[in-house]
Image (tube, rainbow, N blue to C red; front, top):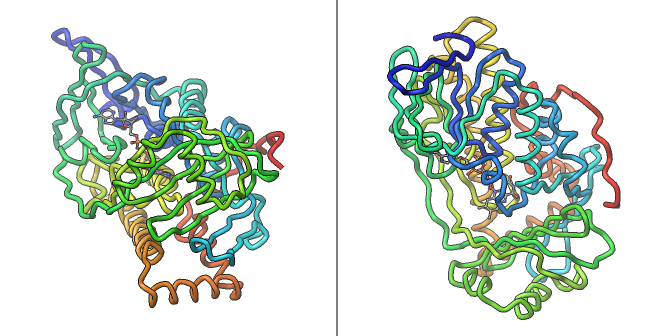
Length: 426
Ligand SMILES: Cc1cc2nc3c(=O)[nH]c(=O)nc-3n(C[C@H](O)[C@H](O)[C@H](O)COP(=O)(O)OP(=O)(O)OC[C@H]3O[C@@H](n4cnc5c(N)ncnc54)[C@H](O)[C@@H]3O)c2cc1C
């Protein structure tokens, strides 16, 4: 396989070769491409939508400090940091029990406990970074993937791009194509997991509260509610409830809905205005039995999905992307075959168990808090008492939630630039 992009016309099918074909240009796929931007490898991103279409999703993500460090190591953080929400404190509470567990940045000796990035801001910044800084990365957008065939020395992807047939030959195919991953299915990789009894209702509001730098995770018996600060006195809310209730909340008229929200947030956000549509997503846990096969690797939601409690999903995907980029860059420097199973297994060994631990943790949190049985209520209230009163436990919990545990990718330790501090959040 040639190292650099070559384009040829054979029998009217436009075709080219690359080292890595990434299927899926969401935040995880583009993070991987950007992380490979200076590796010397040629990369093609194959995305089903246009660049604008892929970035148009109305969603905010709680981002861990480790994700911020990885994006900083890539060099794209300074394009994201000024435009996103930042939180100093996290307040955790059990329904209307007045005792809060308060996490502060000084518990870990860092400036912020996390950030809240809107999908469109993150993806546009990554797309712009790739377009301006990554010469060996190219896009195939509005692409329909018809077939992938794997040979011993590479893979061939048959596509239709804007109605025209195209062929991409690649040494490695990365599935970054989300939870229904075509790449996972065609590689014959099985998954395990379950659907929850809950759905998530997500939306954005403006508020009149004096502070906009606290993230709240409030556990109600029907499901957790995450209240995440966005830049400009706005909050992104992820409200988990049984399927029928989530649908009913979505259908409520705006005044009734905001009255309900004020009750569930105890009025601490002041006067609320709804600024987005309300979206409902069924919640699912999914883990792929393998993350790699010869010539194939899975990253992000193509490999795993977890309950949105504690806002971990995308953070795991960003860590997958950084880990895979590190493994591939090293293999390339040593002259090894990128699609070789022995190389790809290094990535799987690194990420599969760490992701499983988070999947288990989010499942445990949801089950223990979405529960009215009094012995469980007593146990979890005791757990919250421990978190409030045993500093070491608090630090350990915080390290787990913020990503500072497990093996850290080299990119998270490579500081590229001091991000400009945005105005008006504190
Ligand atoms: C309600 C809710 C709230 C959440 N909140 C948080 C949070 O606070 N923090 C957090 O970290 N995570 C959160 N998550 C999880 C997060 O949304 C996902 O983990 C993340 O979006 C996964 O990114 P991805 O790039 O792997 O997949 P996706 O975002 O699904 O991107 C996949 C891309 O692949 C493209 N694609 C799909 N199929 C093909 C194909 N055949 N050919 C070419 N392209 C294709 C799609 O168009 C898309 O652009 C939440 C999830 C939900 C449902």
